[in-house]
Image 1 (cartoon, rainbow, N blue to C red):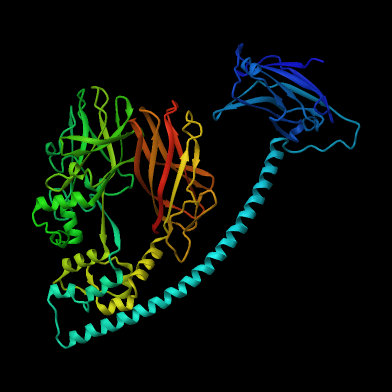
Image 2 (cartoon, rainbow, N blue to C red):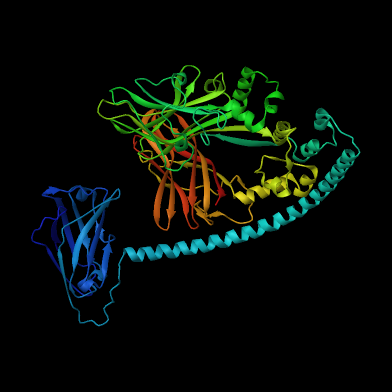
Length: 634
């Protein structure tokens, strides 16, 4: 027996509607062959999901059914498929309110013109009652039941693991308490002896104070040892006053030209409003370029890292290493620093939005340039290491960063809009070196003693640490833990995401890996949690800093844009943060260190997405490692 044929048009032009008849209780014995067209042209349905959708008489039920659609590759090419009506489609007597087929592909949806369905009644009083939604609903219920079982099993496993870890940690804590009691007793004896010597007038020279075993400085050294601490100094334009280097030693300037100019071509403080550059607050500095064809606007930020280090750590950092002259100090910093520049902004020109940022090389050119195509303030960053700092730190101790837009064509201006620009200076010092430099820096100044609470928090720089204050504050390690408890819990992951289909780099959600957890700093309360697949759930309102290294591996040299976005789900509303944009020509590996500071609320969830405009088998894998999330405060 041949099927009834429905000729339906996706343009929905009004034509005589087709009619299908059925009776309550009929079950999978009536099949229709559907031919789809779009204004008399055959509609190629290859790759589309096809669904019958309808509302029965008086809106009693809604039908969404894709399981009973039968297709062939040849049929789809011609716009043809079969649909068999299931029992539940004929569960309500009367004429359908509406009936049609929908097609969905790559997030795009279309639907056919409607057709009519008449369902006759049935004398069988035992005919099944109508369900609200058939097929798709049943499938969803089964999936939810399975997910519930898996979630219960996972929670039980996590509970058992947590109990085991608590037992192990309790044993370790008891052992550590015994060790600390011994150390505290020894320190108390040394400090009391130091106070006795002080009262008897037994003073030491500055050199003796750092070498004698009994000295307070050496007590600190014995407590903290030679362990390295990584310190990051953010340099920006906060409190900058135009024409003065007293409050802030850095400078910026904007200018328009037919070529990218060297830093020396800019006059400090020209065409800039420093308060607009000093924070990520959406209050952008907008600079218009010359409307003459070929001229492009460019803004240079000049960061004085020599002066910044002297203000933060004092001259001792240099003197202890024999660097007394400027040339020696510059060479020292070139060998021990890691530098990262960050600029939040956007640019526009004749071709639309394009914003570029790079650093000045002592070889005489701007290099390390990255770009993005967005129309809102988004971050561009790059990072140097000791191996190439000789190119980026000039002979006067400055690092120069440029931000620029596309050149004008004579009718459309070249414009840059910048929200915030800064330079992160990263250095590894032993804790002893740092404390020693701070003692030398503040020696001779009449500062009041720090309270134990101030020692623990470590925010004031106008007090001194006394032996009694150190004794009352407890061990340095305990003080550092208290600092981290105040400012949040930090977690670090590394995860390698292999691209399964190289032609599809937009591979959806990317989660942090709990399997490769590197370190968790304990906190007295959990500011956020994460589930088995790495979805982060915020537990406490506050401002958070999210950082990560994003690495990309390419199969071949290719020009493209590709970015990793930080996704925020707040009550079902999804927001996207440009986290790791990349645009241009690349080959082999590309690496970016990325950071975002966002305000979160309890219940928010965090994950990533990967998107690109390239589908030429270029992207091989994406790696997000050293992922950290830290609560900064309220």
